[in-house]
Length: 258
Ligand SMILES: Nc1ncnc2c1ncn2[C@@H]1O[C@H](COP(=O)(O)OP(=O)(O)OP(=O)(O)O)[C@@H](O)[C@H]1O
Image 1: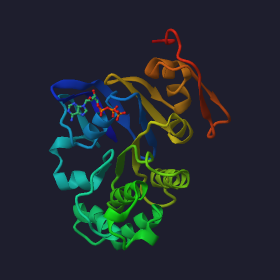
Image 2: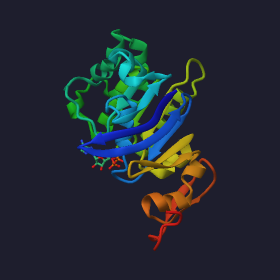
Image 3: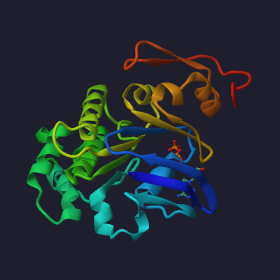
């Protein structure tokens, strides 16, 4: 269990996450959504142990995250930042292999599985500087997957991907959360696309101004009144469960429920 308890996070001298509590379970895909500046990336940093709590706590299986040895933490939690820089101009397979650093092994099978999962075999010998933005995003995510962390925390992992690669990555993340064999991983993703959250997440946390305004299964957490409250937009869902599309109308004069 990865849990935030009454968590407050500060950035630039300002509280950007306030009194947030959520206990996340392995075996589920949790989507964090909300308008720009709501605190989603900050929360993910806090859950990854990369932004220290101003108050409250983040725990991994009951242990305060900050007290874990950095290597144990890196083995347990794989974090993919939003629009990350690539500091090394190496071949794709060498960059993906860096995901094994916390384990200090070669982990060849895990590296190969990550290359396959992200459809990177044809690119494995290419220098990362010569890749498109979406290809680079897949390499960086493959690096996280190669580390076989118990928790995958990814900030907008789908944003740069084309439709086919989005769908195959979602399928892969679902397989991580519900593997046929072996231990289930926990998957936490920041998403802007509410349709992806509605159709693929098990649980959705909706943030606004550093607070949770909804937390639950997608059909509850992404109900039209929550969307009105969070984004100030009138919207409704069309279609069958698992294949719903958000229809956005004109801005409401007054947000329902907000
Ligand atoms: N490095 C920083 N220093 C100071 N303030 C920051 C920093 N990064 C983010 N903030 C502020 O913290 C608040 C939350 O930012 P955060 O990046 O967590 O939001 P977000 O919900 O992920 O937004 P977006 O959807 O735009 O990516 C914002 O008000 C932002 O301006």
